[in-house]
Length: 347
Image (cartoon, rainbow, N blue to C red):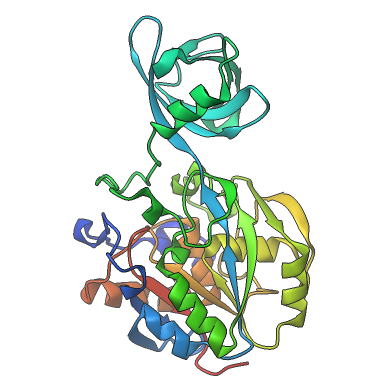
């Protein structure tokens, strides 16, 4: 087995204190670690310094998905509590959801919510997802009221409640469908984006609906045996044109944006537009066709996200940067600090 193809090659010691539990008061006040993939050089900056790092003509590509999943507590007719994570609608009266405890809720099981709202499990789908149907033809007002009473789901490593749910949305989120936020974009504020536009930096959007499988650990010791879960993503025609006409670097904000752009690649700096389900697994040895640089957060050990960024810089350089970030008490994961992988010389 080639070194770098083993799951253990992407392990590191992440202290509990380094996992950010709450967002910073000012989104853009996070630290920013700059890693030069060509030399392995590291600089420690603030996120607002991205204005100085980017040049006129550079293209920032953002994932504009919006977190719309809701966590509800229901009850079985026998009185037992049921946790229901509503992922989204799949028809006029049906929706997809994850339920807990799931094994006991088979097809035909009924879950009761507040305001007399009831739903029946009508289908078991892959990945533990179930299709549920609302019973008794409830009004849209009742459905919306019950969904509004739920909570935004947070990653399993965050144990603090979120006082302001908007802090788990990017300021440019617009397309509903995600169960988790594309967290690299959480650092942007509208004033910071205006500063970038004033400098001549261009913006474009893609959409990838982030699913809960994002947080599932890789099980295969040999990465060649790992099968990626599929995620729905899309590239609009205006982004297709922006990629083709980009005069500077193409900088992807987040691993979900990288995955989308590379899934739609049809040639150097050329993408198709449209919608697909992607199962692209980017790891060392992958040749990027679209993305020149990547803005990302710090990821868990043994994850496909860590493998992806190790394809843009070397695995050794990434793990060295992670060790230095821990030494300097960076905040990790969704509400943590940021990292940019970008050559020091503009193309």
